[in-house]
Length: 63
Image (cartoon, rainbow, N blue to C red; front, side, top):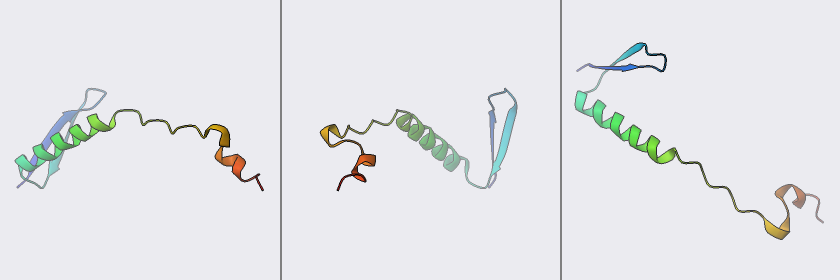
């Protein structure tokens, strides 16, 4: 079965794509992808500093 997916791009033009899957499967995939995007939209946490040990680059100069 073919499923036609339609949306508007950032410029406001209508876009479409034919999918070779059932409509219910397409909806499930799209909703799941949006949920993952919302969860991963947060900025990754910074790594803690190395403290008194210095940076990784400086380790090469130590004997």
